[in-house]
Amino acid sequence: MKLLVVEDDREAGAYVKRALAEAGHTVDHAAGGREGLMLAAGEPYDVIVLDRMLPEMDGLAILRTIRASGVKTPVLLLTALGGIDDRVEGLEAGGDDYLVKPFAIAELMARLNALARRPPPQEAPTTLQVADLRLDRLTRQVTRGGARIDLQPREFQLLEYLMRHAGRVVTRTMLLEGVWEFHFDPKTNIVETHMSRLRAKIDRGRKPELIHTVRGAGYSLREGP
Image 1 (tube, rainbow, N blue to C red):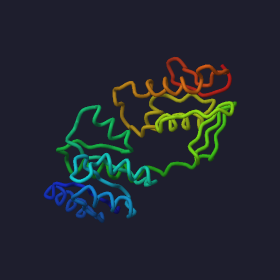
Image 2: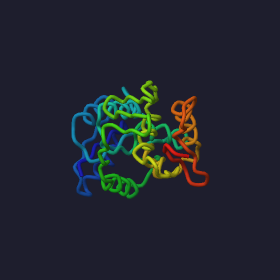
Image 3: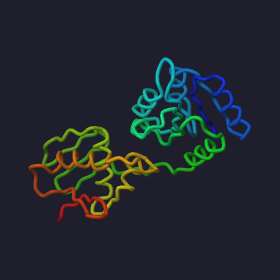
Image 4: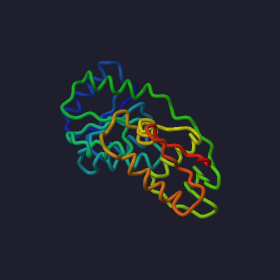
C-alpha cells in the first residue's frame, strides 16, 4: 500500500513510518498540517494516517478540507482524545476509523489493512425521487412538491441513504455504517436526533408522510403507510 502518515511528533512519525515500511508499504511522512494537506490533496494514497493535534492546521481541518475537495481516501485518525464526543467529532468530519494513543503497531496495521479492503462505494443515480420528494446528487438540492428544502450536509446524506433504500427498512446499524461510516456503536442518540430534524423538514405540514418509524426495527422512506 501507499500510505501517508501525518504526525508532528517526529520521533513517533519516524517510528511508525519505519514499521510500516518494514511491512512492505510505501510511506510518506508529513510533520505539519500544511504539508500534510498538500500531500493528502495532491497525491494518491491507499490510506491516510492523520493525527488530530497538529501545528499550523489541525487534523480535523485537514480532513474537512480534503473531503470537501472530493478526496475519498480512507482516513485513520490518531488521537490522544479518547472521549466519545471526540471520536464522534472526528468520524463526522469524514474519518473512517480512529486509534487512541498510545497504540500497538500491530493494531495500526490491522486497521489499515481493514480500511484498504473496503470496496469503493457504488455509484447511485444522480437523481432520486419518491412521490413528490426529489433529491439531486449533483446540485445537492432537495425539493418536495417543487418547493426547495434546505438540509445540512449530514441531513442530506441521511435522506440520500433513505431514498436509495426506499421501500425497505433500514436499521440504526445500517445508518451508522452507511451515513456516518461508523463500524461501532458510538453510544449516542446521533441517529435519532438527525432523523427527527430530517423528518421535521421533509414531512411537517405535508401529506403523505414519507419517513416512517418501524417499531423495533428502524426506519423506512415510502409513500404508503
